Image (cartoon, rainbow, N blue to C red):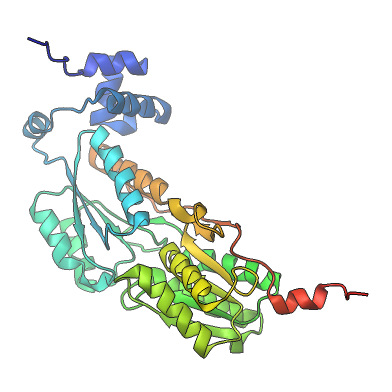
Length: 351
């Protein structure tokens, strides 16, 4: 009979991490009392060894559920999946369980999902996007449950946010295209109702164009996230037939952008020679297609980890969760170039 491999314990984790048993215990129970480097060593060692504290015994001892809730729009999109995975990985290593509810893209409809999670015993909450519902705001103030919003940085005095500036990220992409010489652009946006992320990106697009005197070159096409791989193609067909002067398209999701590029091929348009395309998120697949996609890289995993650490600090040490604005980056690849009109003007004449 084969002997089963012994389950890793706190002593194994301490040895693998090169720290004391007391440090391992503090890392899981009061992480804010352990330095960041030592805490990371402990969590990494625990994950490698498959160790986690006994949640039932710990909950009984401390009269805590060790459940943290997350309300996200969808798991069908990799940017939310990456953030949620990093959030859950960090918390699981510290002995918590994560209860995830998907609730669509309209932030005005989160109250029921939040109540469901809290009634299941959640001690803290992660929400995606700005809180638009005054009833939800009142509920959070009444319950005093630690809560953080993510994916949008906003200066909310009640609920802190750990996210990025959607307006500024879009502005950077539009200004890049303007510097290339583009004067007539379209934005393919996701659903705008109750969606502060998409609203901020649309404002960034419109106001940046207007600031450069390009009022007549602004076109917004709103698409749903259902059957997303078809939405970008549908938008590109609309642009092709209704706005033939457009030379650049800003897509508010990489999946829209890649679908749009595929439709360009069917329409006989070359990317980027005839039309430039920019995405948003920097999903893993953006470099395996041709042309590789120029896009805005979003710190999805970093948001998840930062939010997890902040909520653990609130639960274990009573620390206030602080807002944090994380950086995005415009990653320039092969799907953007000077527009053909500008290129023709700067090309030397053939003798």
